Length: 209
Length: 171
Image (tube, rainbow over all chains, first blue to last red; front, side):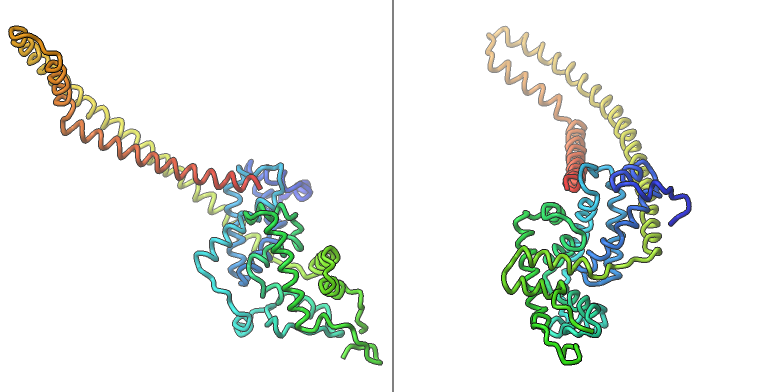
């Protein structure tokens, strides 16, 4: 935290911070950046599957959001407004670069963390279940189409409503619901393929085989 | 370690298999909420704020440059307008005087043989055309059209940016 950031600034709502930032307060905007840096990098990483690139895109989104603070309507959530800017930047990048659907084998061969081959998702193992579950979920999520990944992250990680996601992505709410449904089903299929859907079999020692 | 059959992932997959959509959605939400969060370093925040600052400085420089260019353009256009306008006015006055003298002579001559109004109108139109269609006036008209087209293009760009900003504001 930069010196001089007032305690009240930390407690302020997003809308208040945006207003202060528009009036020239750099500290206020810094707090907004701190609040949304994680979600922004997370969303961008899920979309472009490259952490360094995701940080660049998130940084560009914060800079562009600052430029356009005057157009932010405080009656709506700052997060939705900001995610729309990030969405546009990321989609523009994907279109401009024509990023192909990189196979997960390639990602794994490139040593990319968290993107295991979904066909070989980590199977449940009692000893390290939580870590493996996270890895398996990440891998399953990475296997989805970019728009499915985006709706999953916005809905279940950033807790945006279907209508807010529709606004961010510029698509009808019904399409968002369809994407969420299909994304969940595809992830469940991948998890089941990896053995996560099998009923628990207890060994005499209490461990699963 | 014993596997808990009531873990969210098991609830989720079972609900999906049984097509209990609401239960599947709730279990999946709770599963995703438990997943580890992406951590960003303090350096990322500092880099971002630095980018914001330099962008703001660049915007200010651009605005200053745009205002300077606009002021110079207005001054040059005004000077050119005064010069071209003065020349045009003098030219037009000379032509009008010439046309008036010719018209007077022609009218005097025509009055002897009887007036035909269509001939008067044709002569009148021809005189105006001759007076207006000088190379300088054509150049001024073309220049005005070019300036108008550039202004329309600039306005379209500005409106496009404004529209994009308003669309973002609506979310």
